[in-house]
Image (cartoon, rainbow over all chains, first blue to last red; front, side):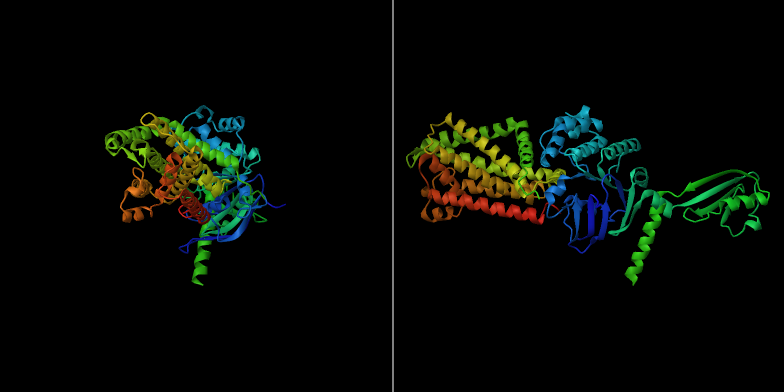
Length: 317
Length: 257
């Protein structure tokens, strides 16, 4: 089945020659949350801006719900809601009127009952008659979300939704996004916070230098690129790794009581059972074991570094 | 494929703009009424007493169409230019660019509201003038038609200025440096026929002269230029402005930069 968003060979080159996107292709499935990760200037916002109609692409096509964003732009845009990175609100307008206005722009008739539902879900109902200039930064961001939801979009773009908000509010935002997912809204978010992508996304796309390096289910990505570390706590401190255990990639901590063992989760045999058996055979008593998976941040850095090396190699060639 | 005009979108923009006008109704109406009263006192009573009449019309009544035109031109340009410039300034312009409204809906919403506001103010000035001079309107339909077309033409011009402007200074530059001089030199307070032949010829290069002349004709049946020419002048202005606006939205100049 075709995705709700189909992106084919999308490219954008600005007038000065800067190439912001190069042949990006991907399908986004209905109801999923996809996080786009990438360093500053990677092309994430350009990609979102093209799909939403803010930037005109120089090549390729995008279809939203089967509607081409250029030839059938009205129908495509009706399906989309955008929460921009910058907080931009009419300062002297009330929250209620702001949301009503956006609903009107999308060709929808007045529906205060629905707007009440949206404002309540975002904890803004008590502020409905307040002018937006009187609100805190976090509330303004929620007003932007309320506006983006005013016309019941099928697809919601969140461009750095929690940039500059405190930890408590960030968690609150994640709950809001989770609520929208339950309502069946497809969500595409860009973020610098890898924790955010790890927490919310079903799939993760990594963009760098305008190229989409990969798009994979989060769990698959973590499994594929994530290495695990086994830490073995010993009963008695060792002076050195016994010669019988040499060549296994073991590392002894300075205190002599902890052994670290890196293993690949994709391998047929991780070697853990054998290692524990050999330790026992050497008369080394194990007190405790723990494992730690590398975070998405480490995965991301390794991907982007590899991408940079490849780009440099291509440039050199 | 949906290509029909998004009327709720037009109404949302129009209503939003009109609400801003009504929020500041006192300053919106009071300021033009006070300045018009001053014009009547200075030009009508103090100077008009010495001029007596122009082509058979008492001077106080003669300047009423000119004063209305002065107001409608200034108000149309400033309302429409501010209306579209403010979202650019505050960053909310993105909403218009990502929603299913095209250049035609955005123009109808902003320009329609700016023209409606300036017509309301012009009609209040007309009512004010009744307190000072006896004004009889010979062709009320044409008076309203000229009022509407002029408000439309200059609101479109103001809309272009708002799209073009990158600062509040630029926003005020054109009304101050171009519109006001054109109105004063366009026969707001005199008939072009009162000028020496050479200057009468120069005055006829001023497009605003045609608007004021047509408008004055609807009041008194007097015109510096044929009424048909005035109508054609307004129609050309509306057409050229619409073409420019369409081009701006198609290319994204000063909008998507």
